[in-house]
Amino acid sequence: MPLILRQDLPAFDQLQAEGVFMMGLDRAAHQDIRPLEIGILNLMPDKLTTETQLLRLLASTPLQIHVSFLKTATYKPTHVEPGHLEKFYTTMEELSHGLDGIIITGAPIEHLDFSEVAYWEELKGILDWAKKKHVFVLGLCWGAQAVLNHYYGIDKHALPQKKFGVFRHEHQESSPLTMHMDDRVWVPHSRHTEVREEDIKNHPDLRALLVSPEAGLHLVSNQDDSVVCLFGHGEYDRETLEKEYKRDLDQGRTEVPLPENYYPDNNPEKTPYMNWRANGTLFFRNWITQVYEKTPYEIEK
Image 1 (cartoon, one colour):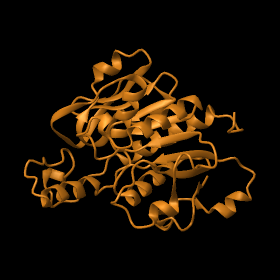
Image 2 (cartoon, rainbow, N blue to C red):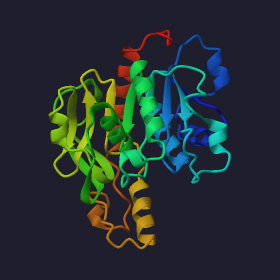
Image 3 (cartoon, rainbow, N blue to C red):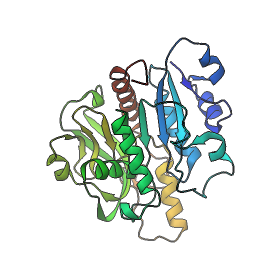
């Protein structure tokens, strides 16, 4: 089934060129189907890249999905194409319909305490609203850390060195969220902080589903999968880690490590391996299926 988007969204043409099944709002309005309503609170500086990466994965599901891009009202980012937020994004207060699920992206603010984040109080309000309305919550990277901190009081911890590369993860227990995934799941990570596995295991409502011996947690959920957290980046493109690595080098950061398990023979002149796309796609398909199975047709309920 298609992803329902405005046809003038920059990501629309790129995804359509890739063969992703897209549908404009006008055509969708003439179908007697209630699509899932998914909101994406995009906190990343590069809005367009994050939009394309997440939409590509959401479009792989067999269900019709209407995506709404959300922005914070208390903080206006500057690293975005002029007019893009005003044209394609809305605040929660301005949203004209309910949501079945909401995705909270990462943000390059790991060095800040949560209370120091400009939009922290607004984000807590959004998460409280989601809990009250029984909206499924998916946190990504810093967004995952924020979700666990607000809902469960779990802290993040600084790492001695940036966790950077593609890492192997093992299943800790079976779950609908990891159905049909490989026995060993490779996922990119790019983090300066972490949530510790023992803090998850010490909370009775939380489960660590995918864990790496080298990178730690990737996938955590609560018992009914209404709150799900991803610390790695299954949405990344092949070149995402490479662009980040070269950006950091260009900025004179000589301490930046070479991404682990990424380049063939650890040679940055070679094309990077990409061994995470299939499992990343499966996760989003499984998550959307969970949302669909547990969501009433009448969204007001």
